[in-house]
Image (cartoon, rainbow over all chains, first blue to last red; front, side, top):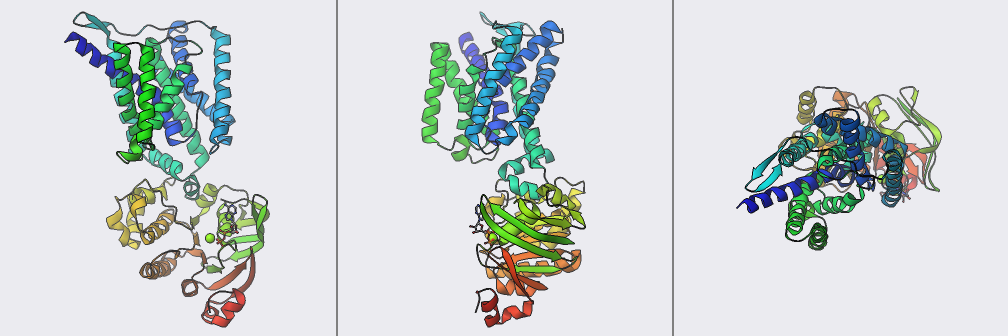
Length: 289
Length: 234
Ligand SMILES: Nc1ncnc2c1ncn2[C@@H]1O[C@H](COP(=O)(O)OP(=O)(O)O)[C@@H](O)[C@H]1O
Ligand SMILES: [Mg+2]
């Protein structure tokens, strides 16, 4: 009984962390079609921001994770978009190579500053007991935050004028521009929001993961696979795909090892993409978000 | 109002426009007639800024706009209804209309009410996705969306292409009413002789990226003349 409860918590947690790690990529790759190979490094920067803020500057951890990490990485996103991403829109391979270079650069810079050592912050709040097991309250809160985050992103995209402008621009940039929309600005802002969400993910995951300069590498494959499997409806698709993959990975990790969990995720992804080449939202429920 | 002088444009290294001169006065309805591939669409795209000019100048209301991006030109009051309509497929008809004035600070409901009064056919379609509309409905939506931005000059690219005759008639009526009511200036590109003759005050003939002659709409009903000027019709 306790084991079952624990397992459910673990699975929900796995889903939440995966969805969280994917949120920014759902915008940058899912909506904008920009292959950001430095996605994992954006997360790593978010994590380091939270580490520095809490440990060195003594700032409250919630403020660090929820506010400072997204702002810092969002600003880095603007700089990156203005200095080179914007020259590569519509050129996937070039973007891939450029952002791969960027990821190496970011790893290099962070290693130079902090050294190749494991940093970490301890999770806020205590833990509660499920039978004989101890579960960190933070993990539960994280699930709630991720749910609110996705609802928020969805509402902004569907209910606000800015969201409408962003969707119109992604669907047909030339037409948006002749309707008076500065597509350059829309791309910049959208990329910054995607980067900010990625920074937020890095910050929120910092207390439950190891913070090292190369931490991003672990996220690239799984996040891209999840967003691709999600399909054309970037937000809902990513959420559904996270649900499937998070469950598979967590159950296999629990039963066997985390390595097998990762392998299982890959196998399920390959099978799903064979059956649904346009992704979950391309076929099952046709959605545009 | 709009003036283009010596406009040249090319795709890659292939030149398409070879020095086009065009003067449009306020309130005028100018038709541009030409075969497929003569550069009509390219000309309108250079006027709105989607294709860069390699030479020549464009001015609008006395100001040079040759190097301005499309969104700036639109904000100056130039509307563009593209060939193929370019309806946003995955947003509703209402949101397609809203995108027509999303960057303007105006009363949203007022603009929508006004445009729906002029285009009552769109009323029952407001919540449908743009992609499910028929070609004719999309054309009317594209025109309505453009008008939502309250342009003073409209560039219209082949609005009758692939559209059933009843809707073509409807579009003629709409354009006539609008021109009288909103004091619009229009540059219309067409291959449909009757349509262009019915609406235009003067018609320019384009051949291989150049204007070759100017005719009056009444001359377009003379098949021999049309054959001589355009090599089409009669
Ligand atoms: N995007 C493009 N790239 C290269 N060539 C093009 C492109 N668009 C049009 N063209 C060529 O430019 C010429 C003029 O095209 P266009 O302006 O569309 O003519 P029209 O509208 O009169 O049919 C045609 O020969 C066409 O093949
Ligand atoms: Mg054309």
